[in-house]
Length: 186
Image 1 (cartoon, rainbow, N blue to C red):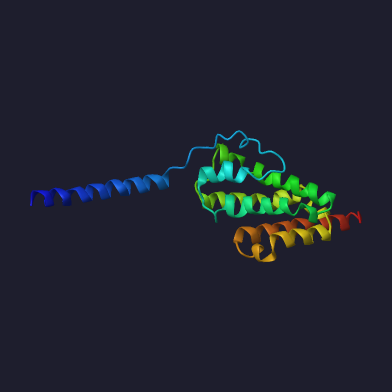
Image 2 (image 1 turned 30 degrees about the vertical axis):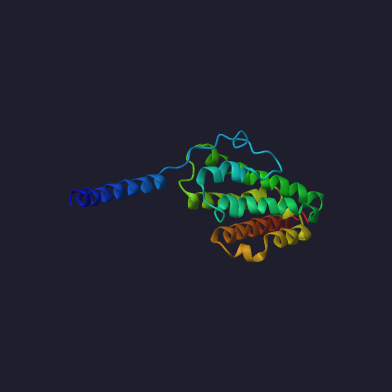
């Protein structure tokens, strides 16, 4: 009887400790990455997503760092031969821009994303700006078609972030072309 009472009093204590441990795990962000390339990702490389973001946020294989950032960085790198020289330069510069936009999240600059969802939202918010600032609108239809072929049109409609980035990019290009027509630069 004494053993049974002790055993039953032991379970609530262990359950309580387990619950506190689980809650604490969810509230604690893994410390910022100390990998040397996190503060300054090298050009034309994709390791930033795994070494700097996934190691910190642990979003899993479907989270932004691995499931989107690294996946498409690698996919573009693997298909660089589909681009002409100008398209390849755009690709390299854009990949670097997208990584630089997330450096603060990797090294704990103020404020880092609070969780995987916030990281994904912050990442997608940088996409259109990086595409545009690196000259996407001036690349021509052949490069645009190649980008769509690599990304796959279904991907652009699979998440709000990707869709929103596409709409912002198209809108920025339309504004540029309207300006060029107005100023008779064509």
